[in-house]
Length: 300
Ligand code: SIN
Image (cartoon, rainbow, N blue to C red; front, top):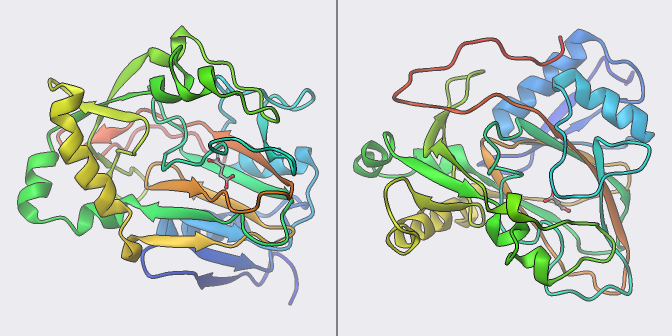
């Protein structure tokens, strides 16, 4: 099989997820190969491209085919590569949680949340350290029509306060191997549609997650919690998940608008190091505004 001409795409689970074999992202891939990967990302929400051997520069160059890397808030980046964060847990590290160890959608508290994230395995434990993904399009599609109708015009406040604010997790617990700076800016709030429309394919997605979606517009956190919890539980039903088993050379790319994810912390005593590039987006559009069809930078 010649690399980049015969991609093989295998689904991982019913709701979302696929693995891609036969790609070599260390090369400058042609438009046709890129289209196949991007379409698989849109179709399956998360794709894992196996057997890569990438420098940080090559990792970044692939991500730039999709869009501009997002300036990363709160989290320290690599000295030579300000677009990359190193998600590390050391072998001797014991913390209450690992980075990414709650169900979340990357930086959903930004006015224009990332379109995608791209995580590359640099060092893996001999077992464990998988990442779970939930399909937020499936979560929406499997709600009753009554619930869908109720949600379609609602808006939800997202904030990073529980993680990055002055009283958030990272203000109290420092992850020694990942520099995170909690600050007042972590308390900022933005409003997103609860049901967003994906401009590339018109899919509807539930844009909430356990940690950053804090209340519905016009309601208190206490009033919002029962419905937010119900919707997150709906998303986390086993039928709506896939489990990504990392292997040496695996690079995962997920649509940050249609998924949430969870890093499993089950490998104490072993080191895990991943490099993440987060890819910039445009503000989300809800159903009431109609399908967004405006300019969309994907660097092609
Ligand atoms: C993340 O949330 O980006 C990290 C996921 C992981 O380490 O598996």
